Length: 389
Image (cartoon, rainbow, N blue to C red):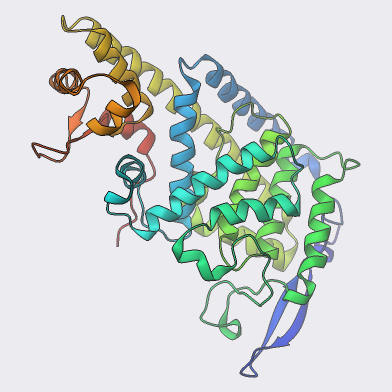
């Protein structure tokens, strides 16, 4: 088959300064000629097995909501890092603990908006189909920060954008021009809702992700929203019961290959290589998440035993320990607001947990102390370390 038939068309345009460039308009999905599905079956089997194991593990976690709470935040950090932010998971948790009194860098606030957009989208897909309307709503949440004020949150672009370079004339890739945008988006929405297609949902999500990134319908936030769509699609189809499968660590670790596959699909029509890369990422990500869940279960069991056998256990200590499992960076003010114990009781309990080497105080101050459940945070934190400057 001639996969070159899958390549879109280029439309010659010119900028305000008169410089010409070629904008790309993709072919509608699904690809034609049709995908060679036989190439995917072994990887699909492995991916479904890995997802099933992860889903089963999420069901036996002592407190699945804690794992989900932290994993959503890890994904927010990683997906934002792919776009160049320098926020860490600890930065985000400190912002949530201290509010505006923290060193609220714009990068951290962007990540916080990603968390809000994810929760908003997961709630809305229970009531609305994954549509252009919903995609715009999610984008508005994603871009709800000062840095994004001039990027038209929640609105499709009405001007030309580009990827790489300083202007369209030297860009690496130029998405569809604004006058062709809605045509591309209408085709994209029809693909999402086409019940006559009998494609495995993992394949459909892989196709949708590239198409969304190629259309690039917003002035900013396309990469982050495109990665969110993968999780929304898998949740909608019931492939995962909880939103605990995110590809951003895999894509961050293989960033050059990721961008290379996106561009290769556009230039050569080679969807098969991208889908194999995508399925490999699903397998690796699901396996890593399962291992993370197992490590967390083991840590919680060990620390619970340490407290129980310390001779200093009390209901207050266990209550505060449970709080720190959900919020591994915390201060006394937040703890007091949440669990309604007296401040002396909280301070005594935190001191005991610190002496047991379960938590650490990180400010070194006598007042306004911040405590970290550092071993738990280290497990979740893997892969989110800041990129070197």
